[in-house]
Amino acid sequence: TSSSESPLMVHLLLCCTFLLALAAPATTAASVPAPALTPAKQNMTWDVEYILWSPDCQQRVMIGINGKFPGPNITARAGETLSITVNNKLHTEGLVIHWHGMRQVGTPWADGTASISQCAISPGDSFTYEFVADKPGTYFYHGHFGMQRAAGLYGWLVVNATAEQDEPYRRDYDGGELRMLLSDWYHDNVYAQAAGLEQKYDHFQWVGEPQTILINGRGQYDCMLGAVTRFHRGIDRRARTCVRGKEAKLCGDEERCLRRSECGPYCPQSQCAPVVFDVEPGRTYRLRIASTTSLSALNVQHDLTVVEADGNPVEPFTVPDIDIYSGESYSVLLTTNHTPTFYRSGSFWISVGVRGRP
Ligand SMILES: [Cu+2]
Image 1: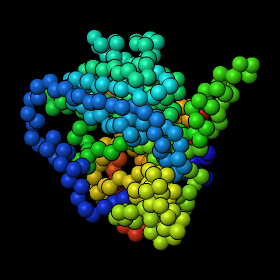
Image 2: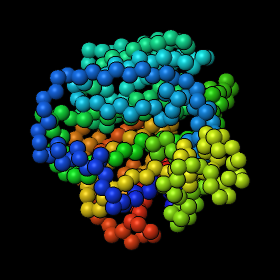
Image 3: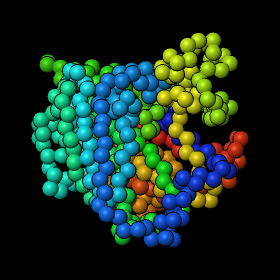
């Protein structure tokens, strides 16, 4: 999949509506010192189960958490304890969850690596992971048993710095935070992928290139989004339902149509609708990027300033695009300094393509 022929894209919509939710933390954090917080604890309960989902407008079986894909966003403050009770509702396989980037100081049993730090949680059983999110940074969690990560078992784990810690680049962005969790997606299920890799006499049969790149669990198979201009004409972000016009005839059953995302990427309710970031002109945003791909090395194209890599601040440097390999994460600064001339209101694209694979 060359990035120039079939770019999979994020649409940055420049919106005149002020996004207070995004803008407010930036201004308060810069001017008013946050009150000292007592060490807090977040409790979560997750049911991990098979779900039917259409991440690229084609329904498949995935592994979801509490009925959804990707899993819940965890946003912690450094020093906070996370307590996550995981119920294994996969009836035929074990389960663990690894907290990628967490140092697990004093809690090695919470690392979530099957057969290393713990036995896999048996079907029907539960296990409570409890650990301190001690270091600010951009992380994620994922299944670490069999190929469960490739089946969709992953999600964000972002650790914010405390007021005292103050990340060095904190004052370099005034627009808030955006997130892009990237992965590759294959239409062959993970059991078929594993069977190919493990074939007795002809092992390491790789499934091939991914059908779709997912951004925050969303993608569009086979360039179905079409030309950029078609997308701009086709999408109605205020639409409350999936079925309208021609699609009504196609779907008939709206509930089914929504569930299977049969109305395609143009319906904002679709599980495969493109990710859209609302941003204001003339601001700088912190964009967190992480990759959970099976094997694809990805490339994100946009002018960016890199400020964090894998939870460590780096001397800022500016790039026209960035390569990201599986398991890596970055924070980059993105400035909305282009004049919005492109179609309708100001709309811009970030593209994510496959750079290659090892
Ligand atoms: Cu990992």
